[in-house]
Length: 291
Ligand SMILES: NC(=O)c1ccc[n+]([C@@H]2O[C@H](COP(=O)([O-])OP(=O)(O)OC[C@H]3O[C@@H](n4cnc5c(N)ncnc54)[C@H](OP(=O)(O)O)[C@@H]3O)[C@@H](O)[C@H]2O)c1
Image (cartoon, rainbow, N blue to C red; front, side):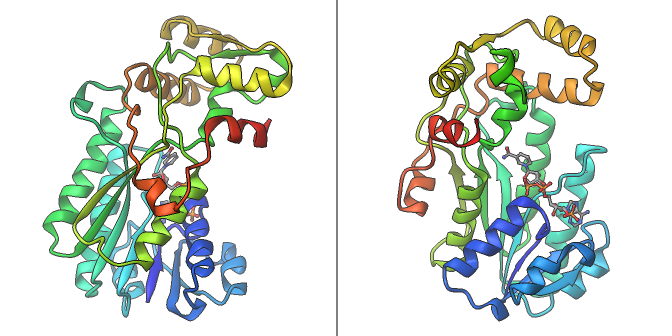
């Protein structure tokens, strides 16, 4: 039995679809959900739905009975990043208690000297989860996923086609944006093939891209001019405030832009290409699909 957590979320639901596409029988898959009301689609696929919460250890131990392999989709808790660490550790301890054999964890790509990066808090949370998993005695596979391509329209703004302007303080920093769907496919590959025990994989695209290149790709696709302006973080935040963007979002945009300016996500590795058996979707192909 393979159990996928976060199964009503985007990554987990796609991972289950890829397990089914790879020929795993629905009866061999179970899905951990918080709210069964959101699981009608999973049930219609014949997947067993189990209810559990990362904050409720007992619910996890119960849900993990009879599970051999477990895909832990990292938490999206927005209150405090430390909450995520505690939740992940709960899942790892519960998996151990329930005699799960192999746990696959969706981590985030990491470079040396990440302590100096704008996303160090996230990196520390993933690092602490990885350390707990490695020490757990479970077989483990750590998927150090790079940033989703799907974040580009969020960062570039929904109205870039109308405004012809991208405001984002990422300077000329590059990141190896990768399609969430393909990371989910890679997770399904790891769960259905041999030899991934005690492995840590960097899953990235084949090239890293800057926002200058992203703006050019959008311009080429739309056939109109698109200007990328990398303001200072202070100028960017003042502009966003004037546009009425909530502080929470302004902080998030500045953090990811600064991390990109610092090159924190500028990692290129061919593991994802090998797992997919093809080149990952490029930034320009993604742009052509969404704009
Ligand atoms: N690489 C990147 O660029 C990137 C970008 C964004 C996020 N991430 C990380 O990757 C994860 C997966 O991405 P995604 O796009 O699938 O995010 P998502 O759609 O927000 O899914 C997150 C899933 O985690 C579940 N979850 C959160 N807290 C939980 C808890 N206490 N107990 C049980 N389940 C819980 C959610 O359950 P519900 O369905 O009940 O809400 C949801 O199914 C995110 O959670 C985040 O850690 C990575």
